[in-house]
Length: 484
Image (cartoon, rainbow, N blue to C red; front, top):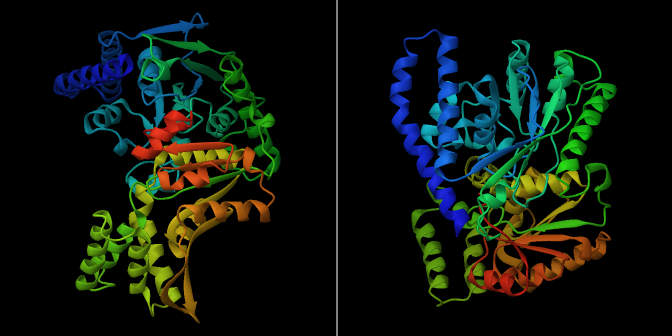
């Protein structure tokens, strides 16, 4: 329980200090020139962070720190916790500019401080674009970071792009390498150790020290200017890849959590089978789609209420899940296939995309980087599951198939993808595509997904329900929490 209370105390201390000092710093800053105002916010925020960690009883230990912190360098660090940006800001002081996730994802008081500090926030992918407005595109963020380097400022960047959920280094993105090659400025690796233990309950004990280890500085081979930020030239792109691999090797030298990227590429025989609802998607996609149909008046309110009633009867145990699904799908009888696809695509972009579990999204990115095949396995009807598969450029989707007559749905289910049917679909897919299930992964949330999970060598329960959580505990199955 130490980690939970330490984390709670840290949050309370930081938020109280941030609220208390916000107005005084704002009023004093209003009297200062622009540059001095930004320095005031940066200095104050660094002191607040240090004080918060001190009050929470967390010690920050630095290893191999250079005698003088170079004010003109690209700091690149691994990303084990949500607090890494605060940690590095406290460590490096007010002279650096952090590159962060979109400000809108932070609590308002944190977002307000970061805005005054002058961070560069970035829309990392299409999920960010759907969720957050007003942040920088990748191009805009890189251009601003390069401009900061030209002003002889330093920047902090997390090449993984996302917080680690599996206590292992993710695939590194190329932003740090591009900026280094564009500016000719070296990369200073910083390895953050034990932060996930300090804030975790699972490891027990009472560890209170987070270690920052400075790696060997990495110097770029030449300076190529802004062109290399967005180049399509294969020779320049190879230089970016080589420098990124060098950075990854330097981090793994001090943090040997797994093999370096060149050695961990998988063969095409490894697949990742991913459930959608309550695993990748925060909710029940088909229920949300139903309410979307009601809001957009694609179905009448009467029909919508009748379908909701079926869900209620199923939840109350007065109707089996299979019978409920068959009766719900009858409402699609006579619908044109293209019409359904068009409505579902609009629903996916406007409603479903912002509800994807972001932590799992970064894990899937990492699987793709390792050459794994991504296959969605879901009870969702095929046109809906296909939207998820297309967005992730997945290799396939195993889902609930509907009967059609010509170009119209008959309102009948051909195969309900649930329970044993999921496992059967995974087995057939593996046989058809030469997949080695012993090397493969599966992510799911429900005990009904157990037949699928038991097929693979690496089953992972994501926000498991009560029965799956108990089974995972008894059988040492990996459990992922906090992937929203």
